[in-house]
Image: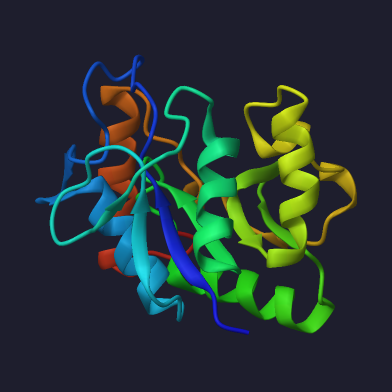
Length: 192
């Protein structure tokens, strides 16, 4: 089962006040941290869905830019079949977590496998081609995110630490992400 890696780059970034895909963390744009993790997990090709990502990421346009991440996910599935997705604003996601999502999808045959920290992470997961009908139905019913289109509590999950799925929405979150990366570089226990 080949899976494309999709960096979700759409959205207005209203809480941060600027486009998050190009926001710099430890000398590199957020989107490239995510793209590298997807690639290291075995996803191929790795593309950006929506937005205006930094090079060398190639942007694939959202068919409905203001319809939310579910529309972008549907677009990605229609283009690529199986997809491993992660938002651009989760730069600390480790390749090991993403690889485990692919492995769990292969071993269970489930149409959706999600990361789970203290809750399921509907935008960090593996979506198989078989999930497309369910997601389209949710989109047509007005859902903006995949959480409203799937039975989120019944899908298989892979455990994730809070530091693995930190969502960068504010300057304080960006500082926290930098601290997580520094701790990982230093090999600190629990930093993953």
